[in-house]
Length: 249
Length: 254
Image 1 (cartoon, rainbow over the protein chains, first blue to last red):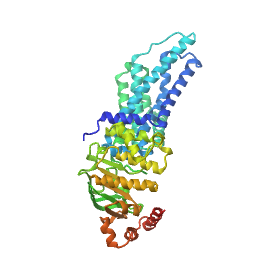
Image 2 (tube, one colour; image 1 turned 90 degrees about the vertical axis):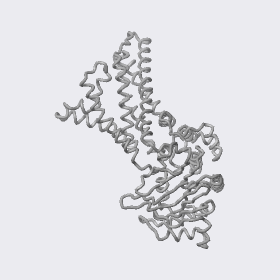
Image 3 (spheres, chains in turn cyan, brown; image 1 turned 180 degrees about the vertical axis):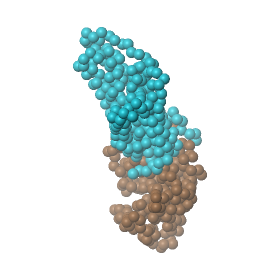
Image 4 (cartoon, rainbow over the protein chains, first blue to last red; image 1 turned 60 degrees about the vertical axis):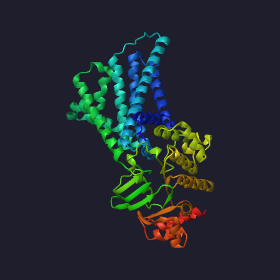
């Protein structure tokens, strides 16, 4: 009997993100919330209706909600106890963890496409139904920078889920830790200067503006902050998945 | 073939499973019997590579479980019928397993029929399932890959009398066609009636093992009496296994 191909494992993990009522509704909610934000920007807000402005508008709901998809992909094996089945069908648990990561990245890419589509649709609507002029210009770097940012947040979600293995705990840690960290940084002078190096939110800010225009130092910021907030929890999470005892309660 | 050799699992100072050695051979149903908390589930999780072994070895089909490639096609496992995503339909849960193992979707319909879940039931979400339905779903999941070995933890729990008889026939047929079955239970009469060999565990240790016939003839009494005698003197963390066993016996009698 040959081993289970990684592609198959990834496909199954992807399906698991979508085949439950909770997972499906989470994705639908993200699309609805994003659309609602854009609707307010396009028809109620003051003037920020260029495609670029609307595109930026999608980033906040996406950054807030999409990582939960990644968190759930990892934690549901414990919260719903499906790990008993998953890890008996594929005892090479690190492969399962990596399949969760890759499938979550896949979801992130698809949803990034949805966000761009929504921004374009609303801009088209603004141009059609109001007297605003069409403004489609956007730096290419803002688009692929945004895609990269989505990937970072998705991977971070999986990493926190794998490490904490509890949905509520992982969601709280995912949002509270970096926020607390940013707060400390803004208060303590010594930390403030180092912030771009160690704070992921600060470091990834230029990505969305125009990743193509970023300096070498700014890329170094992204690299170090990602190492702390993404790679480290991911590595620890994969080790925890591989080593921990899988129990039913 | 399942082999446990001096299998031990300690949690801090507590020995959940100590020095457990037994074999479950092809063609036979091996009953794994013991009161609640005796170490049955921990032993079964060690056999399946889910619980790390403190010492000793566990082999399934001659290798540690974690070395089996695509284990679902060789070993059918049911460890906890309640361990299913409540928001998934029964059919979807089986479809995921079938995809992972690489068996066709037709096999999902086959096992659903085999365990007696109707198409309508299969399309309902698991949160609406009774324990008996979850148990049938879990057995369907174990049979999906047409395995040579079955490892089932308390599979008769929650089944009605007709379901218990069905399960008994299923396991007997599976063993008769050369398969290996290890099933745990605290339902003494149930094990007595289906198992060819019995391993009795109490307080994490094996207190008796052998063929059902020999164990029963030696005691000249029912297996229940033997079971209560053997596990009565062991007591762990305040619970009285004998009381638990009596409860099970009462449950069984209903």
